[in-house]
Length: 169
Image 1 (tube, rainbow, N blue to C red):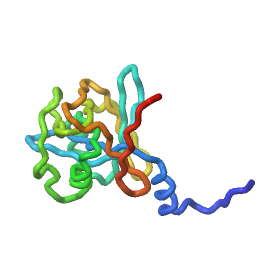
Image 2: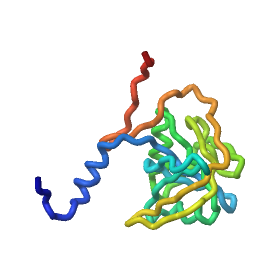
Image 3: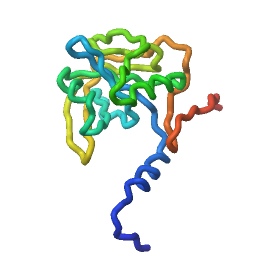
Image 4: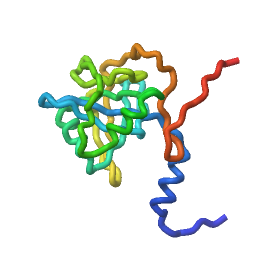
């Protein structure tokens, strides 16, 4: 079997990756009295000991340099009911925090009320990778939120999805 030697077309690459379902998070921090944050679907666990997680962010992000300066962040794992929050934090140049209820984490980061779960982290490492940065955080605190939501917010093939509730046999 032979494969074409042509370069990968960006749109084809994006479409192929869109077939991988992912959860949606909002990465937040707080510096100089200003809450900051952005929507992120490239989040994953790295290590159990020490407890490390990672996310990727565009090198041109306006929010991430402030998070780097703060040296800490919260990963807010969004519920299926938080599509509006995901969309709001995905926009550039708007007041992302308008109407968003939040509370302070143990490290002083904004926890978005209604999220399924949050992880309070200190930046452990950062690596350049193409047009993105890979950020690794060491988890210092975590907690399940008090919410009636039981489904995560998922993204698949360019749209939000919900998984059907099911019982194990």
